[in-house]
Length: 226
Image (tube, rainbow, N blue to C red; front, side, top):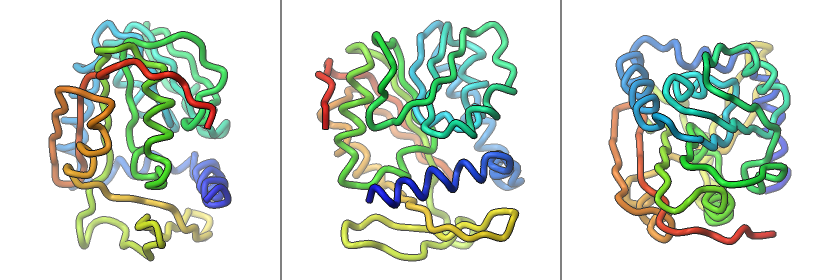
């Protein structure tokens, strides 16, 4: 699995320059506008921890209302693109950090965000991520998660399923190279089950092409060394 994660990091580093083309699909524009408004409204006045921020596409919408954002990603290449975004008056720090460890971060945050990251978490690593993420968030902090829904005939087809029930897609970059990427599509039931020990007041909004979830951190968590 470690090799798989390394391959995915390399894929997104190579994809950095074309990453945001996925937000240009005409049939998805109405839902994207809804998500943009939702993340702006969710974090007014908050100090936000964002994991897997990529090129900063969603960071720019959070920055419209948040007080500060610590936007993290494991890929230095995508962070270089994020530096080109206009974050207005918001205090935005772009930090190279693995979502499974968040090493290099200090203190805690009053809100958390993970956009289009959950689908890339191996199923047996979900608890590890949630423990690390919530250890940096104060009890009661608002959290927003969102990701893709699978739509037959519109989403990239699944290429295989492994023994742990993780699913994969084969992606092609503009240079013609093909890459197998872990992409798990989550049901509302599965998400609520995963969040049960960590969150309260969970609200799940199913859209056609995406899903949106918000909740509040239920309790503080001691960071794990695992």
